[in-house]
Length: 214
Image (cartoon, rainbow, N blue to C red; front, side, top):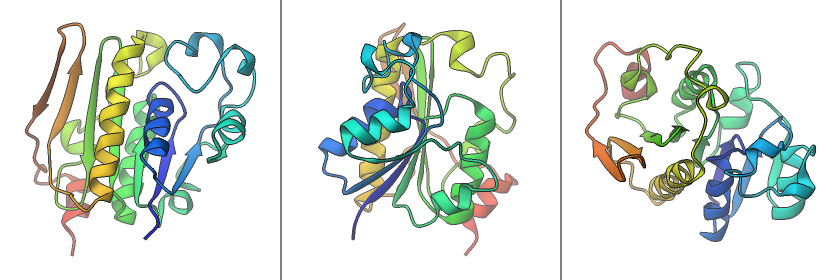
C-alpha cells in the first residue's frame, strides 16, 4: 500500500520533516502552505535559501524537491478533501486555531495525526490515533492568542529541527502499523533535554469521544 503523508505547513517543522520523510522512502508527500519565503524564516526553514525570497513556498518545494505542493490554506470548507485517505498527517502550522481545526478534521476522518509545535527553545509532539488522547485532551482551550504564534515568541532553529525529526519518526511509526499511545514528547533545548510524558484520553472530551466511537 502506498504511504501518503500530508504535511500542513512548510515552515520550521514542515521543512525538516519533508526532508526526513523523502529520504525515508515515503512514496507520496503532499504539502500545503499558502505563504511566501521571507528572510526571517531562513534560519529554520531548511528547504529554502536566499534565491527563494519572495517565492511561494509551495512552488519552491514542488520545483526543487519533487513533491506535490499547493499554495492552499486548509480550512473547514476544504479540510476533509485534503485529509481523507491519507496515511498520516503532520501538522506543522504555527497557530493553535489551525491546530484545533486539523485535530478535529483528522479525528472525523480517522486519519493518524502528528501534532507538532515549537517556540523559543521548546517544542512538543503528540500523535493522535483512535483510542488515544488528542490535542484537546492536552489543551482543552487554545492558549492566549498573543502567545500562540512563532512570530510573537521567536524560534530557536535547532529546537524546531528536533521537533520535526520526532514528528517524522512518529509518522513513520504509525504508518508502519504501530499506533500505540506513546504520550507527549517535550523538547526543551534551554535545559538540554527531551522527555516523554504520559497522556491519556480525557473522559468527556469531544475529540476523545470521536476517537473511541466504533
